[in-house]
Image (cartoon, rainbow, N blue to C red; front, side):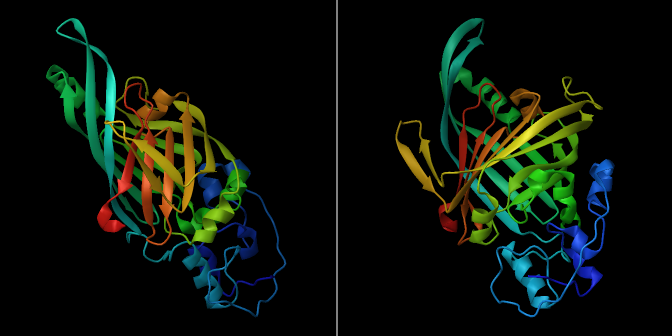
Length: 341
């Protein structure tokens, strides 16, 4: 379908894949901020569109001449309203299933085998431009009791907040010009420009190309099936802007990559008593992030491996499984509370 833009304000409010059809340059705003050398010129012939549907078109690329085309596209991404960027589109608390940690540590100069059971919660508050993720891990029981103090210290070191600034929707049109891996990713993955980590020690990081950091659970079902048909790999660099961590000095530039792929919407969680729980969603997405090493990625406040199960009907996460990879914390699964299901 050949589409025509009715007003330039539409292009300013929503960026999808082909900014050139709005009469601009690919990367005019995002490209200049993140990768100026990727900016370029392109022209597009534009015609008219007569039809508009009341259902969100899952293959829509640009808003059409009629207002309905524009609103359908916004609805396909979950009812996005660029005019209220501070409004919460997700406010969810997930509870961690009880998880067992085992190992050996020196207590009073004597190596002692320990066993620690812990749980926790994950609080997510997200608008279209920002995300605040607060993770808390809490001790349930430690054996022997002497291990409790050190267990609490380890869990506290993996508790804290990660604040993320996303690429505004008005600038997302240029993402595929900055990195071809973004081509077709419109609704389901959130691109980060900056992260502020207070998990452990404070570290502030910016990215020379957007970091695909989180999944959005609010898009219509067909968007997930359309946007996640296989493996995607993103190459980018992280710059340490501020840091309280001696191994991550300010000014350091770290090359990295991200892999996104669809996974089974069913996860098996093993509890401390060896019983298991099967968690099911409507769609599963895995994000693997690596800058330098898993340990360095973790120090930046990023989770090296995250698996998201989406509940399309309720527009929430059914679960988020986090593999922190800090050398001691086992894989933790945070699940929606029963009241939400």
